[in-house]
Every structure is written in structure tokens, then in C-alpha cells.
Length: 74
Image 1 (cartoon, rainbow, N blue to C red):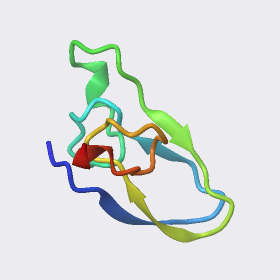
Image 2: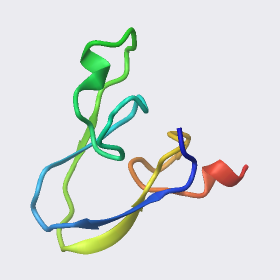
Image 3: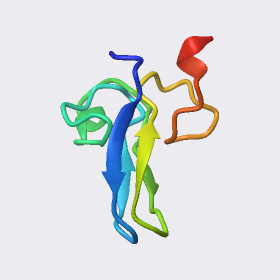
Image 4: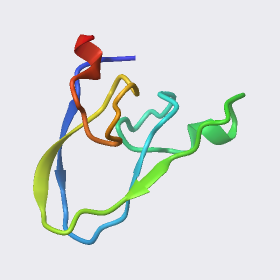
């Protein structure tokens, strides 16, 4: 699992599913891998109001999911 955040382009009013388990082959987005793994993790659904670039957390330690807050540096 990488700890460097993912820089992504997000489109306004589009539904996104951020991976919380770290098993997705489509990181940082969920591909449903948690459904066949022995984990209680579920994807986090989110939207943005305006199209933007964002840094999405890769280490899964952020206190502001799905966005990177620098927790990987601690």
C-alpha cells in the first residue's frame, strides 16, 4: 500500500466511492474488493459540488476522509 496521496480530477455532482480497505485494484476508488475479503471495511461515498483536483488519502489514516490530511507524515 502506498502512502503518497492520489492526485485526481473530480467532476461536480458525480458519485465517487473511495476505497477504505486498501485492497482495490482501482485505488483510490473502490472496486468492491472488500466484499470478498475478510474485512469489515466499506467504501465511502462522496460528491463534490464543483469540479476540482484533489489529493485523496492513500494511507487510510486521514482524519478527513477521503482527503489527504498529511497523516502519512506522522
